[in-house]
Image (cartoon, rainbow, N blue to C red; front, side, top):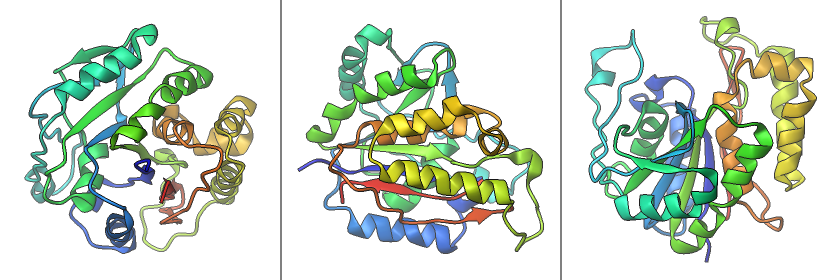
Length: 259
């Protein structure tokens, strides 16, 4: 049985320590997952490199890569063990892509803010794969597809970012209505996902509509969705454990395959 693949729209770092509809949806996902994975490979919006890197330390540090938040958030630690042997295996899987293992990174908030809800005991080995700044969407897809065998080996592939992520247009006042372009693009992505072909996601990026440009002013929060979609099978129907747009321009949509 294949281990599920999951994309989570992680939103604000404060979700790591708050209880709300989104975080409760993660608890429901945890309850529905068939079994504890052997390891978790995360692809986060918050680790960008020149070239593909895989985090290989035995004890990845908790990275607080943000500012201006309460001390309680900086106090959070997620002391999950690393998976150096798996990192070397991924390095080999991606040898033709020039991947290299490194201990220079840890777990950034895109990873641990989600993982502490999914696996609060931090008892599953975790490692991260970086987003290569130098690659086109189709090149990212090629990298991602090579990770598909990991699902047969008990590895949960977790992408974290946001389908719509425009910080310049955020409405900080609670209860603000979502922008029309954000709603349209979020629904366009849902429609593309339901076609069960990762190229449909790439085409949205390549077409570059006005809704796309407004929703994805930079690609780092969008690309993790492509990685999760790429490791799915054409017979796997995605489900959406959480849907909604916060502060006008942040999509919190989650996408789950294989459950």
